[in-house]
Image (cartoon, rainbow, N blue to C red; front, side):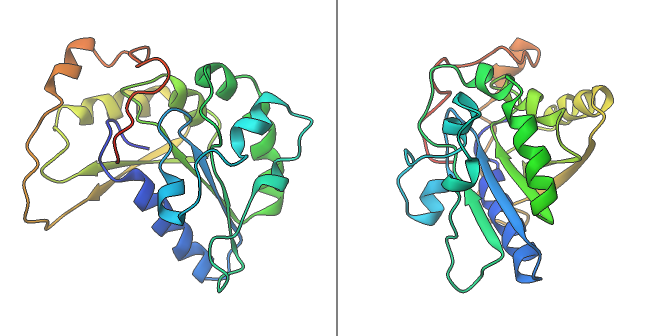
Amino acid sequence: TSSIKGEGKTLNAINLALSFASSDKKVLLIGCDLRNPQLHKYFAVKKNIPGLVDYLVDKNKDWRNNIFNPFNENKFLNVLLSGPIPPNPFNLISNGNLEFLLEQARQEYDYVLIDSAPTLLVADTKSVIDLVDSVLFVVRANFTDKQILNHINDLSNSSSSNIAIVLNGVGEKNSYGYSYNYRYNYKYSYNYGYGYGYSSDDE
């Protein structure tokens, strides 16, 4: 995950999944950003194909029917996209079905990686953090404000998951500046969402 949008969490999730898969580890990569999904863009597929949302809505559906392998040359990587954007992402993520899916996936895969929404913008990801073993927070050089480290530290203190930080974009010549300062006025409220989706921009 990341704290805000644009820090590179999706690309890092894909690269991590490929690294494990290239070592002959069976990997499931799940798109769990139900508001502004990005995974589909990297695999050149439509974002509305059946995915995680379909299972969260109806637990009787088999989530395995919605997985696909984006690379024929690597049989160890499976991807489960988020699926159609729902009107109630938080309710779906916290209804218990995701927990059941992860229990099943743990029995079938060596690694289960989740590409989730930013933690400062919506409440969804906090529910996911409570279900996983480890959390990688992606922060970006010359982009992420240092004050956000306080938010990550607060989450670390309140979560049973192991939380680590990935510093992304080190050595990039272009400077992004800090354009997210206004969000700090909300004191990191998890309920500061944007309704149907926090943004439709590319990550």
